[in-house]
Image (cartoon, rainbow, N blue to C red; front, side, top):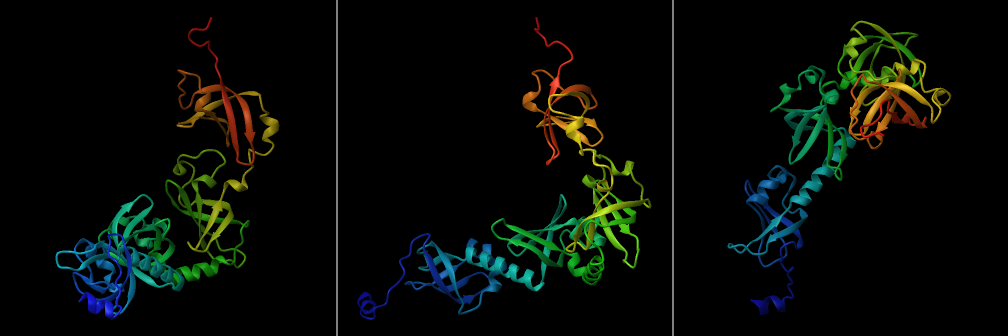
Amino acid sequence: MEDLLRDQKVTFTPMRRGTHVRATILKVDSNEILADINAKSYGVVAGREFDAVADLAGMLQEGMVVDAEVIIPEMESGETLISLRKTLVNSLWDDLVRAKETHRQIHVYAVKVISGGVLVEYKSLRGFIPQMQLDPSFQSNPDRLVNTSFAVQVLEVDQQQNRLVLSQKEVTQKEQLSSMRAALTNYEEGDTVSGTLHTIDNYSLGVTITKKDNKPEVPGIVHISEVRWERVDNLGELYKVGESVSAKIVRIDMSEGILQLSIKQLLPDPWEGIEKKYPAESQVSGTVVKISNLGAFVELQKGIEGLIHVSKIPAGKEFKEGEKIAVIIDSLDTQNRKMSLSFVPTSKPIGYR
């Protein structure tokens, strides 16, 4: 046989674990894949290797040539165990890119609710649907989606970051979103608008922008960081549903079909002229408002906070929120709105002579 093969100048790829080969798909069954790998025996995807790609096997067709990796050069049956995981997973990511570009829907299976949204499975990959991208009927109770399959549209695909972000409402609210995006073109960043609060949660205010000057009614949202210049802990203590507010448009979010708003940007900025009010090396008084791993945050006035870095806190000193203390202004970073402080002890330290 060897002489015959030699006379016919037939050459085979040497088989070692980890060898990369070109595999021509011969057959796809319910529990294995058979391929010609230009060796003395066929390549087969079976057992755990098949289980790992079972959801992707439908992407293969007889005659297709794909990259494979040798796992076991020669099994007891004489065949070579090969893996198609990398090839099929890469193909899956490529298919998702095409789905995003063509706005093609895919079907996913909801696994569980996590912080900020729902974790889903798409074949062998995990994806994430942000809460705001769920159909409005599920946004307040996303648990109802768990263990169900439904259609979504791809928003973001990044194989290197293993990032797959999806949207349910792009499917269920397609016409409404299209209409809303058209309405948003009537607005510009920097415009001042008025509206009525329709929702208040832990992190944002939902606003319905009032029709005015032939501009249509559109939704807006004010993140908690854009409500006041000072720290805000409870939006429910400041606002009530049905209350009227004015805000500045900071971003027109076409993907969400919503206006990103700021209330604080219509209020006086406490950082303007701060160098004159709090010059470096001056001593002032303030209130400790937060303790973190970085140190103690001290409020000097509404909207103005500075940090006593943990490295500057005297040994044995423990700050308490609400405590009134004296500090020295070490430095100001007006561009990034940061202030570095040092603590001024008001009592003699233990051991002082």
